[in-house]
Length: 209
Image 1 (spheres, rainbow, N blue to C red):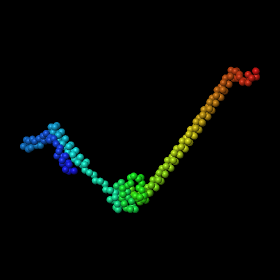
Image 2 (cartoon, rainbow, N blue to C red):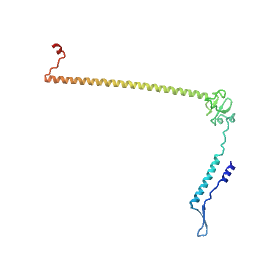
Image 3 (cartoon, rainbow, N blue to C red):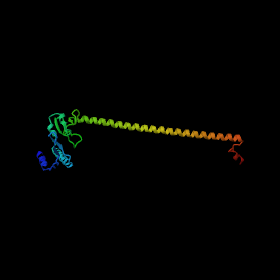
Image 4 (cartoon, rainbow, N blue to C red):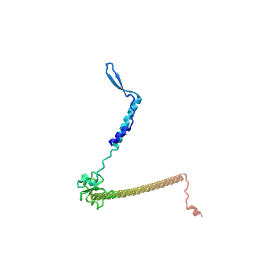
């Protein structure tokens, strides 16, 4: 890797800054060093610095990362050491650290019994985990069903209350209409009596015939 970086560095061409420094003599006879303000010199120096940074970054990127140790090397050690890698499965009965069978949701009994299998943490096995998850799933399903039942019941009760309210409003409206009709009829009768207008008897026409 180092030789590759050296070859790349030697093959690159750096543009030398055009007089980036200057020397001058002060009144006391001493020598002063200053920086040149030439734009071309500053640009060339900045470009060379950028090239060096790119070379260093490329060398670091090409450095191979150490591969993770296989799970089998952690067998006969401890559960905590084995489960430091999430891809490992610890079998307490055989004290073996094996690769987790990713093709299966649960490790088959041929690999390790569920009561002895540990993954992620050492204080719970797959058997207890399955029982716990089943109980939680059952509780969640029952809670959802109860919520749905309560919502439906509340909706039916609300509809009944709304229907009863509509019926009461309809009866009240009919009662008001009937009272208004009776009031108008009484007012007409009072006007007829006041002006001596006899109310026509509906049976009089039948008697005349």
